[in-house]
Length: 449
Image 1: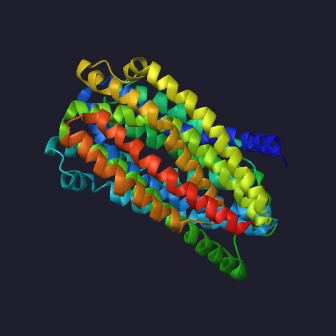
Image 2: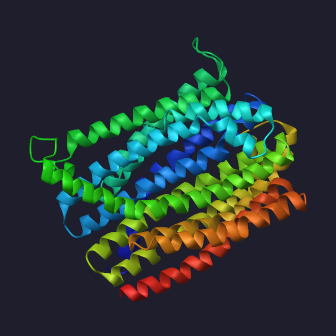
Image 3: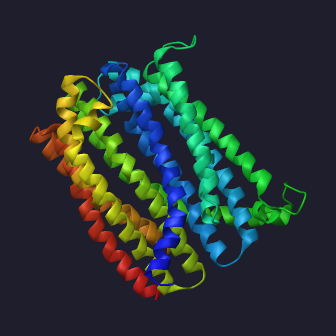
């Protein structure tokens, strides 16, 4: 395949994956925007709930990401029945992780108080977090199923069900945030309830689709039988261990990265309600273009993993560079739009002058930081396709905790630059991560070749 062929293949796979990943964040962005019009206090409660919510959710999704790595490699090698056992193991692990997260989300008040938040904000944020917790099993099962379908070259169903969940979430938000159609007026807690309901509907629909459309080889069972015999259960357990060998380091990496971002939210909380509300807006705007980048990273992971499964080192390298070229063009354009239209974008979330005064300059800074953030996530996806996961975790620790968090405290708190200083620190950490991951990828792919 020449460069044009690699670009076309990547775009065909990446487009629905990007829409699906964007849908994950669109739900959160719609929650934030609709809650913002319910008042600064409600927006602050939703924003502070993200401090424990986002890291824990991303750790769970990271555990599911092993599904992509293992299933894409099995697909590239033509081992269809093995991919069925991977799917079953992914479902089991997603459900267990979701239940554990549900329990952790009900300790929100203690964790927020431990992070130095005021008692009032901690109580209100904990109520929102507990409501989100009821949807954790659903969102992880949905993620695992979507990733499996993407790995075997069927990314459209996950995209469709994610779009349906977004539409339902917006309607339920209108009901529960503002108290329409006889529903109670719940503010930020209502946004969390709406998201939870939408996640359960999306997960149930996607799992039903899998059972209705995929053959027995994809389900790891004989024709006409969905229950596994003893030998197949042993194979399923082996598949589960294989998933964990990849998913655990990815989950740890997600936890370190998301924990670093949560630390920035805690710093914003120290600076006051307007700062944390503005920073919550900026994180949403920062994360929206990150999700298409994550979708492209997933496509790179799959294409590199399939080439790796075929033992095609040159194909793996070319697939990676195709993804990097696409994200360079995409994120540069989006970043320019953020710089130019910062006031309009911030105004979509709130009309509070005090919040806008902080959010608008922070959005402009975010526009400059989108490209390095996207490049680092695509490079991570390429390395995961080669099953190189633990070293990337160490690089994340160095980049985000060694540079981003200290610089965030220095710029945002010590120098009193507020939310714009916190966002600038994100760029510092991402640039460092890009340098480290690029060097690692060059070394690993050269070894594979």
